Image 1 (spheres, one colour):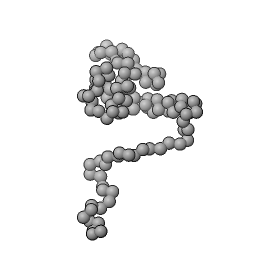
Image 2 (image 1 turned 30 degrees about the horizontal axis):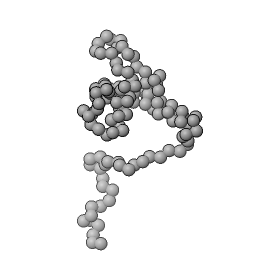
Image 3 (image 1 turned 180 degrees about the vertical axis):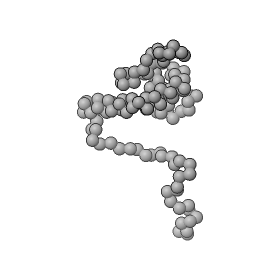
Length: 113
């Protein structure tokens, strides 16, 4: 994964601090996604929120995350542990956006049972 997420360690404009290791940033992003915790609950061993968010947006914009997922899936497929022709989504929890139409009429509109 490292070549897919590589970013310069030193900024070319010589401003600010050197960039954190991409592995630290990715681990911080994955920790938040796995736990569902708020950003201020993140352990101090991970980079600050702004750093993670900025790098995550950059990776998403340039397709780095897509390349990482494809590389991981291919590695699993090569090890006979994953079939790339099959996939599923688990929608156990899918929150509706504010203002979305209801999936059915309200209980009072259904009438007596």
